[in-house]
Length: 139
Image (tube, rainbow, N blue to C red; front, side, top):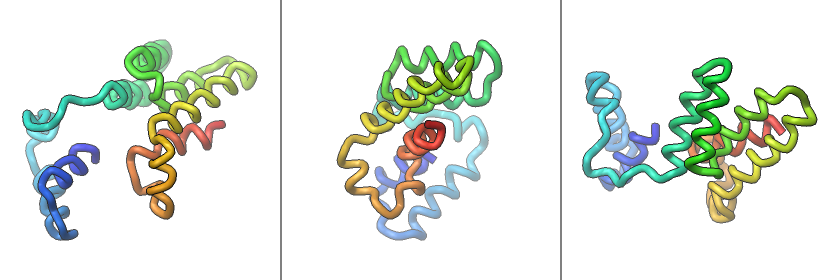
């Protein structure tokens, strides 16, 4: 979805039909083409890199899950999903609570005050708001 959003923004698409064509071209591409990084795209930010590790951690199990979440936080302390994963793996509520609080704070930092002000009404529809909302729900 992030790749699609970037492609739509880069194209300057002005209609739903144009955006839909871009998404269809991405979805219908062979798997290796979908996985390839666009050479014209800006390099991923530290938060984007950390979020990719957090997504991998969500798929992992056991110690590997915790390892990936900690690696994500080493890249960006603003990765709310990584904090939430650590909260989920904590040995009890007392240990989990500060991790979930940190997850919410990280999500707030990642979105910034502008993110809350400008996204009212369609917050859940934006991928970048979801780590914050997952953290808020866990807390």
